[in-house]
Image (cartoon, helix red, strand yellow):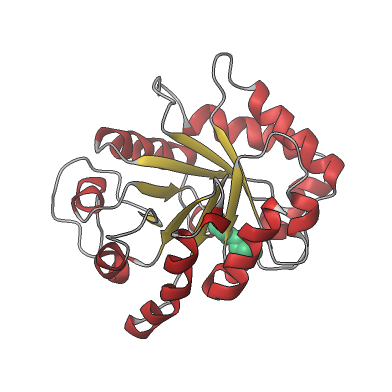
Length: 241
Ligand code: 13P
């Protein structure tokens, strides 16, 4: 199981001290077969890389520019730069960025650039509350997968994070039946090998006991709860107990 911490626009130098507990945990037997990946803001990637040098915790970025080349793009970072700093993952298509205008086409270009840089991609997909209420969940997921992954053949290093928009930061999670259906639907979109499927949206130390029983999930993409080391560790522990 993968436990991906998305710190979003949180975290300063001092936040690194909170990671000692997680490093200790990651070196213990308690972690079982769990894999931890931290996605801090760009400003902390390098410090996280150094911090995790002697453990198995991996790092990733929260987005990337779509260009495979360096260039005159003020304020942006491309996949090559992310790989160069020692990161192995990148989150692409998060709803918080889709809401700011990222289209499926742009997301597709970003994924191609990330694959080109040998980064593992965590593609976020999910429906809004309005889309859910009007019964459009499947068509939204379908469109995001189809156009997001257009002309992408190599799917070995691909994770799909199902993050219903209405569940992010709200404390609400889908019913088990809804989640089962969505996962089955996503897997069904891939003829040969399905990508690894993660769930994201209000994962916390209480609801993990229900979420861990959902079949077909390969892990979780965790926002708020991942910023507290104890809670994050608890989520991993409870997944296995
Ligand atoms: P929360 O866990 O804070 O709801 O955020 C989920 C998320 O957006 C992870 O990418």
